[in-house]
Structures are given as C-alpha cells and as structure tokens.
Image (cartoon, rainbow, N blue to C red; front, side, top):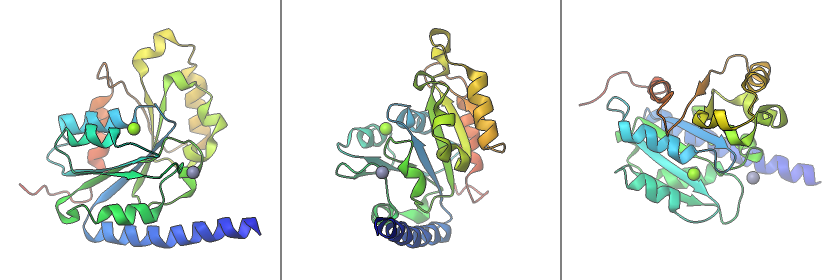
Length: 220
Ligand code: MG
Ligand code: ZN
C-alpha cells in the first residue's frame, strides 16, 4: 500500500509540473533546476552568473532550503528578483511550491528562471518541477565517487558542473574516475570544470546558461 501512496504523490506532482511547464512556455521562460549535495556551491554559481550578467538576459531565481532565507538574501543583494521557498524541513522541492512561487514573478519580463533545489543528491531527481534543463553540481571535496554512488541524478542531468577545481591540488580527487563514471551514465551531458574563486570555466558556464534562453532576440 505504501508504494501506492508514493506513486500517487508523484502523479500529482507530475500533473502540476506539466502546468508549470505550460506557464513557463507561454512566457518564453527557460527554467534550470540545480541539484547537488549541500555545500557544493550552487548559490555561488548562480551569483557568479548574475554578477557578470549573461548578455542582457533577464534572470529570476527561486531558492529552495529547509529553513532560513540566507541564500535568497545573497541573490537579492545582486538586484535580482528572488523568491525563497522554505520546505519546513522537507528535503526536496515539489511542483506545487514552484507553482506558488511563480506568482511572485513578472514572468513575461524574464528569460531565465534558476531554481536552486534543496541540497540532496537523491529525491529531488524524482520530482519534476516543470524545468527545461537540469544541472548536477559536484564539488571536488565531495569525492570522485559521487556519480557512481548516486547515478540517478547523473543519468538525467543536461549539464554536470565539477565545481571548486581550484582545490584539486590539495585533494585526492581522481578526475578520470569521475569523468568516466559520468560518461558511462550520461554520454551526452557536457562536464564543465569550474571555480568561482579563480574564475576558471566561468565563461563556459555563462555561455551554457545563455544557450538555454528560448528567445534569440533580446529586447532592449
Ligand atoms: Mg545554496
Ligand atoms: Zn526529499
């Protein structure tokens, strides 16, 4: 019986996610779902893109966390429309929370909506949020074994970011093992090596985000 309950929860979520997707499509907004363990640097990656801008792209952000508005405050400091969603201890975002958060945005004026999921490598993968693309973020201190141990996320990711590569000289991180594991799970997903501290890979990061924008014309 328990299996039925879980299936029903996912079915309701998928129906709501389809509505979110429709709403975003109508407003020509691309949504990116950021999934990673806590502390991998999702918020910093988003800040990095916002600070430099992405060729006139209008960006909104949804921050998901079990508690606090610390991440949303960092985004708001960059003059970016942001909504904090607190899950009250919940370990992932669900489509109904995104649906409600959308009401706070002027969607027609946005090109990109960046959704930072709750830090968790497991269950966010099962909950469609109506996103256009999924980004998996792994930071080097977490270890090269994460894709092999948490394969679900890497199978569905459109982009894999290997973050904090500036720390590689201090770690026993086997980059070949990491890359091979990702390739085996998802041959098509690009792997971006990034460091927000040194700036390595940030150009490619911004370019990838730019490629997600639906409309090719930027309204001045
Ligand atoms: Mg964060
Ligand atoms: Zn969860």
